[in-house]
Length: 527
Image (cartoon, rainbow, N blue to C red; front, side, top):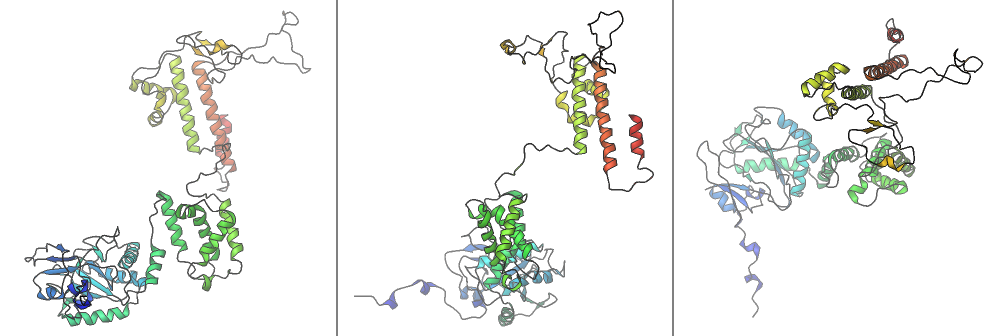
C-alpha cells in the first residue's frame, strides 16, 4: 500500500513554528545562531554558537537568553557596528557617521535605522533594502568603499555585517538581535527613545524604500574601486596593475578622455594580459584588437566617446606606441644594449677616484714595507698617506682590512711575461714569492726610451765626441714610489678640475654674474 504523500515528513515540517511577527520576519536566517546568558551589570556576555537546531520565534519571544543571528547566501540589510570607544563614535567624532553615509552612497545606501547595541553604549546602524544581493557582494563592496575612504573595519572600532569573508564556506560573523536588553532606537542626537517592535519595523520600512540597492551597482563598485590580489603578479607590479585598473575601470565620464583611456588600456594589455589570462604576450594586431574590445566594454563608451568611427585606427596606433615604449611584458627582460657605456654621476665618479687612491696607496705602502700590522695603526697610516676620511676608508676596507700579504716585492722577483711568445714554459707556475709582470700594470711606465729630438730638417743631431752612426737618446728615469703615486693623484685632480670647469662653462641654468668667471680663473691659475 502506498503511503500518502501528506504523511511523508519533509525538511520544512521540522522548521520552527512561525509566529507571523513582522519584527522577527526581518531576520530570517536562524541557523548557526548565537546565544548567551544575561550578564551581570558591567560584564560582557559569553557568546556561544548553536548548530544543532534553528533559532525559533518562540525562543526569541521567551527572552530567557540573549540571541544573535548570522547571514545566509543573500541578505536584505547591511549593519555597521560602532563601539562606544571607537574613534568613529559620535561622542568622539560627531561627523564620522555622516562621512560614512556619504561613502556608502554609491551602493544606494542613504538611510539607516540607528539603535543602541546594549548598555555598553555602542551603536548599530541598519541599512535595509528591497532586493537581496549576495551577502559576500554587499560585504565586499561596503568594505572597499570604507577602506578607500580611510575607515578601516576592525573589531572594537568599526565592523560590517555581513563581514568580508577571507575564505568561502566559512560562516559570516553574527550580531545580536536589536531591541534586547539595553537596546533602543536612537534619535538624531543619538539619544535613546522609547521603543516598540512596531516602531522599529516602521523605521525599517521607511529606510528600505529609500535605499535603491541593485546588484549591477554593487558589481560596478567592486570592479571600479576594488584592488585585487593577483596570484601570478607580485610586489610593485601588482600595485601598478591595480593603479591602472583604477584609471581604466570607471570608463568615460565626459568628452576628451578617449586617448587617455586608450593609452592606459594599451599599457595594461601589453604588460599584464598574458599574466592574467594566460598565453603569450599580445603584440601587433592582436594587441590592438584586445584594446578595442576592452574600450567598447567600458561604461560611458557610447555616450561620451566621439572616436567610435575610427576606434580601430586609434587602437592600432596606441598598440604600436606601447610596443615602442620602455614598457615590456610582465616577466620578460628589459632590452639593454651591452655596448652602451655606463654613465656615472659626479658622486659616483668621486667615489671611484677615492677607491683608486686607496688601492694605489695600499699597494705602494706594501711595496715599500711601510704597512703596519695592526688594524688601527694601518687605518691611521693609510688615512695620512692618501688623505682620505675614515668613512671613505671603511667603505673600501676590502683593500686593507683583515689579513693581507704584507711582504714587499723583492728585487728581481718580477719575471718577464712570456705570454706574447709561443713558449709553453710561460704556463709553468712561477717560483715562490715571485710575480709575473703584466702589460697592464699601472704602477710602472713602459720601458720604452724617449724618442730623440730632431732638427728642423728631420735629422738627429750627434753629440760631440761620439762616433757617427751612434745614437744615444736622452733617457728620463721612470717615476717610482711616492713620486709615482703623487703624479697619479695630481693627474686625477687635474681631470676633476677640468670636468668641473667644463660643467661651469656649459651649464645654462644661471645667467653670468660677477662670480661666474671666478672658477675658470682659479682652474687656469692652478694649471
